[in-house]
Length: 319
Image 1: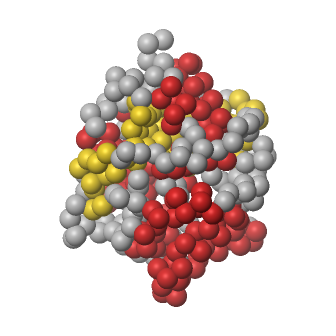
Image 2: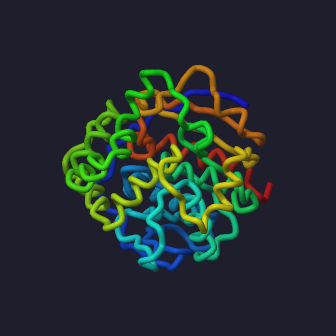
Image 3: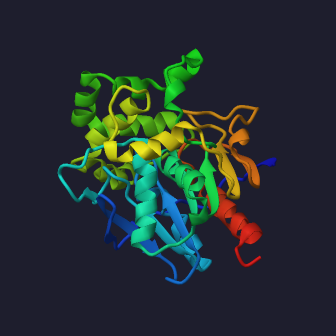
């Protein structure tokens, strides 16, 4: 295990859109996704977080595709054009749903194994697939470490400063908060961007491009259930109970992993001692990215590209 800083990006971010989109039935979803690069290249799944969308990777995907990778960037459940196939499916945002969605998408696209990279909700999905189905993962880039929730201990008080940073979660535990997200989702999410990435000076056009993804009819329900379920305050989808039971045991991750963390992350700032390291039993490295906040692939795309490039160079199946 090593730890070293990673340099921030030096080029201006793209204002392009990731399009055209493709759609595929994958598990309980009709998933909308962007694809780039050769179909026979090594697969790379890039997973966005809350509250964002596929344009997290607008500067990452073209570079990886240029390296010969098959790049897949899906909209998560509750975002953009992704839709539930059955109106009766619970609108759950629990961690098991995110991991199962990623595995189902890989199945639907015929991807036996892939490099996974994700932050926030997307990082959770990547960590879950890496822990529970390691044969499907060639390497992992996780942002902030071990993103699998331990619901049994979730209600233990955190340091006061961290409780303050989690205000947005407590807000959604109330009916007023759920109504507030429904009525003011764009202002709510824009405020989180500013708080979580204090050094990122995004413009209105950048926010608007992603903000339309929050108009998904399931965005509020999925978001509220996610933040309540992780504290044991909302029931999960019964179909996902076996996965949640496996996650409750805090499974370790053995696949090669690079953990990148923004030095200015406004929701989960890095600490000197890497508490996540004990959950990674394979090759593991932590990189602190100067200046960057929570939305690493958008703020410092080079850090993400470099991490994935390093994983491919060091741990290619052909080696």
